[in-house]
Length: 208
Image 1 (cartoon, one colour):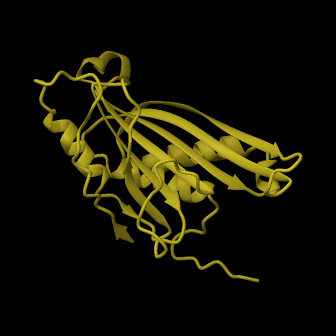
Image 2 (cartoon, one colour; image 1 turned 90 degrees about the vertical axis):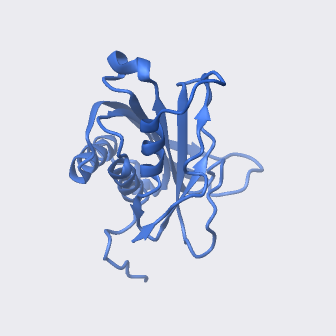
């Protein structure tokens, strides 16, 4: 297990805040807690640029599946085989709409083999991973919603790569009921690991 703390974790990304508006303490606490998440060694975490104008305050992290010994950097465009983005939106005025002031927006994309991608139960199973992951991690949440999409890409003509590629995409959002988001990040990372096909922690995959 590894604790990843990014030097930019406490940077504030204000999208519509006025220059005189100070960063709320609860937002700073939430950002710092995201970077206290304990991750599997196969996962890397880093700060990425959040989308603009979605909320007065926002922060985003990117996670990738790979060999951590190769690089400590997370690409800002996230073009790896399996990656995820988790965006924190904070709007004190959105209590009624979000059922809270802290909204998390998640995106996961992972390559899969044909046998898994063609399973009609894949979307339901992937969504169950997210629900169970949040609950088992003890992440307080409400107002959860999203989509899971399985896609097939077929290459034609002079384009490199395999003739066919299979991917699963998950888009989800939920409202955190507190400012400690460590469990939310850990649950999100667990879903990414499952979607990417990593073995359970402590289990070594046998190579043939």
